[in-house]
Image 1 (cartoon, rainbow, N blue to C red):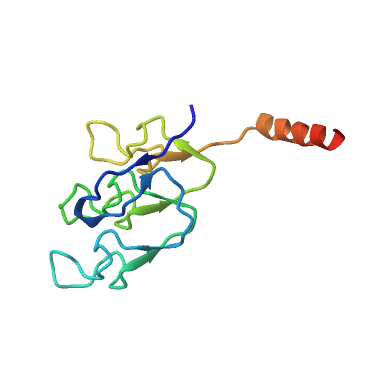
Image 2: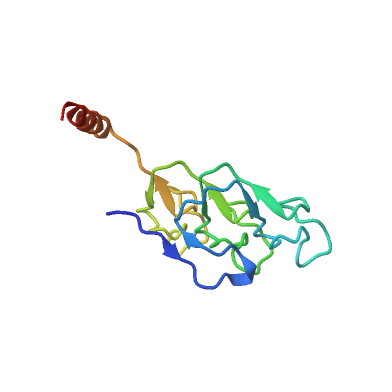
Length: 147
């Protein structure tokens, strides 16, 4: 089964908009917890996630957090940072990726408020390459060289 990213509807509470599961190549993103303002929305103090900068840095490649759906809060409007992405709204991943089989790309196991243990809330998991894949690719490249 091939991983198909899916589009977020409307971003709740001003979270990141985009597609869950799509690989993001940038390294700087607006802070999802404070919506890029640098201030906590329910208090008049600096955002604890971005420390007042309004943006965060993540090692590329990254994906939008499936656990909080890019809002940085879990549950929504709780004023608690997401346990999966720590309030950033995006998570760094290692490619190649596919939809997590354990949570079906939702970032959480049904019936719980905890992140999925396999994907850690990202909704995607890294595909482990086997020696057979490597050998097959080497054989294909060798055949192309001959022809």
